[in-house]
Amino acid sequence: MSSIAATPSAPSRLPGVLLAFAIAAVAYGLGRLMPLVGGAVWGIVLGIVVRQFAPPGARFLPGIRFASKQVLQWSIVALGFGLSITQVAHTGLESLSVTLATVAAAGLAAWGLGKLLRVDDALKLLIGVGTAICGGSAIAAIVPIVKPDEHDTAFAISTIFLFNLVAVLLFPPLGHWLGLSDLGFGLWAGTAINDTSSVVAAGYTYSHAAGDYATIVKLTRATLIIPISLAIAFVVAWRHKRGGASDFSLAKIFPWFILWFLVASVIRTTGIVPAPALPAIHFIAECLIIVALTAIGLSADLRRMASTGHRPILLGLGVWAAVALTSLLVQHLIGRW
Image 1 (cartoon, rainbow, N blue to C red):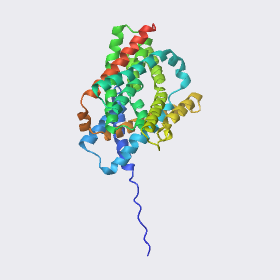
Image 2: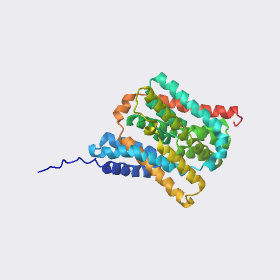
Image 3: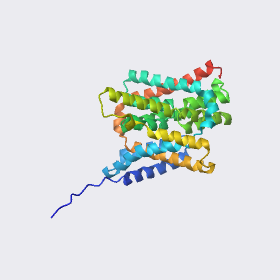
Image 4: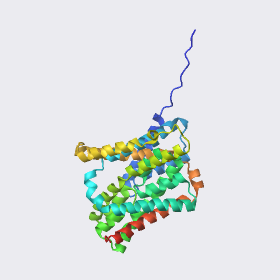
């Protein structure tokens, strides 16, 4: 009598995905109650807390990994539908010199200070890119390319959001003290604060005109996710080839979701998507990124993060200060302040 060997089924992702969604729903509500913090911050914080005090069992892990990677990529694509290329072109060109200078300052500060503080390369890259472009979204974009440890990802996002919160509270009074115009403050906030919600909060605290300008500058800055992600992908490919990984292919690590992000942005610009649908798409994108960051929090080991020490926090502070000061310096040099 013949026997049929049982093939083990793949573990279900459903328990972990449902857990991430449930915690993310609470984080979303808290973000609405406390918009200065935001749902994304609450997501990763609640995820870390649950991981420490009620660690999910093995059956949750496949879904948590799925949410922290695939859902992360979907959230980036969905964000593309909220970014109109034509809407930001004029303001983008006006702010380009300041934006490029702050990105360069973030990269140099992350590399130099990270080397001085002996922070590992992956964490150094995550903090540098997150500070240079748009915080958690930028970190989310390069995670699938560089594949860092989940703990490094969680630590980098937590560090970035910490200084976002400080910026929201500190920038408006500093802007008044420095005598910045509405557009000058909008340019400073849009190029030196990372998360979009934090930029909006700081900008509109200063003035309505500053808030409008800061938001457009921030959206323009967010488009740099694409070239920087591609550049990192090419560097990763080159290093693998140099290391003798003959079976390595750029296509395997190419951030295809970034290409779809660009397609989504073009679709948004051409007006194919009806205007009434845009708020719903924005809501979906926001929810997906909260779910993804919650899953990253659920993957984080707080004790291991604590063992990392104070160096990453100092790195985040140094890079953030370099970006803020560079933005003001370039504005002064070009006569905007």
